Image 1: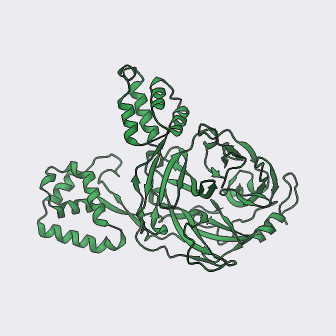
Image 2: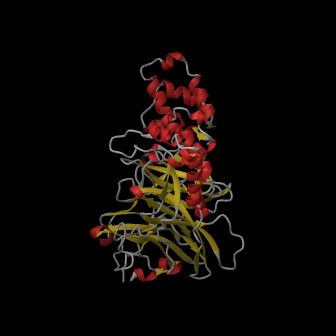
Image 3: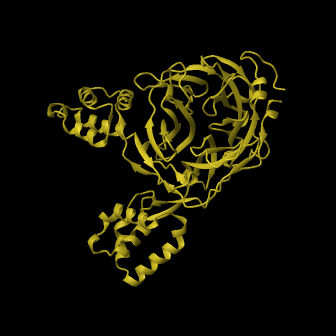
Length: 495
């Protein structure tokens, strides 16, 4: 059977409810009828005497200080966000302000509900390793209360052979802090075109902006628009659209002393407000050197949007929207290099077929070329990729997922021509990895799913989510996997 090719490893990652961050909490905002109770709460804190205020603050730091980085700084920040509600903010002592910040804070367990859908790339740090070892960075979809997803990480060492050691994931977590971003004019133009927002105001703004620009430049260009353009009936609405589209791009970074497993990419825009899902990381290489890229799905509670991120070191990240018909569904996966000068990606634009899309000169992903449609019984509902294509001497190895009866997810594989990836030259005649008795139960039953693996010393290392309850790892000998493939039209049985 083709499933005999994959060897499950004994190491697993399970959701850890101790992995918590501090979020802003405003009493009343979580009610069915929103009525902020912030002013009354601040007034009650202000009426506490100095001794009680000091005692409460010390007790709070004793209880929570060891679980978070710079808790006092977080309390200061949360106080600043709500101080406009204070009747006499200037009369509050520094201790009272910190205590107000504490009352407007709460812990959130980022993976209390589920941990799943990993991808794996070579780690930026390859020092202090023995022969045959490779340090890897594992991205994780973390799901907490309210089914809110964020992106987390783990560090592991693979090799030699089937050895796998995952670094302890303890310690206080850190949410990335917003940093200055250099916006791209072509992305702004592509976003406006997608919204069918093309008029004299947008044309004037785009003409005035440089290829890369910061927020100050953007606002200066908007401020210099001629009055006769702004006075048009569409003028103010267009300004709002320009600002919304421009805000789709942002940057975030972590302090250098924050370990990779302590970094949390947390939703930072309205489009991401209900989650950042299923990051597919790849180490992309071109003439300028290696860089980490990823795609992920932004969810706002009603609709999805495909987004991309780029990072040189997995410490600083730039997030941007992906535009065009090839990026209008979930599951985009970038190639690790250009092919024939083209930037390519796998996609599923129709919701059920794996396709190939290319980036045009205007930064829009073009209509896809179909590669692999549902065909075998284990994948008749839909197929999609399980991460970026992996380059081998035989071709581009694409891990796939298929959905069968009872919405059961399994992982398969196809092979694309190295120089013409529009051509499927091989497929595995059955599933490579399916939910077994140990995998089938969880937050989302009967699912094995991956967002990308890598090859090390001839072995495919495949991290996978098991029913969203845990993350497992499997290894597959690449030569045996390639040898088991058949031609696309061949119906050889999987045995």
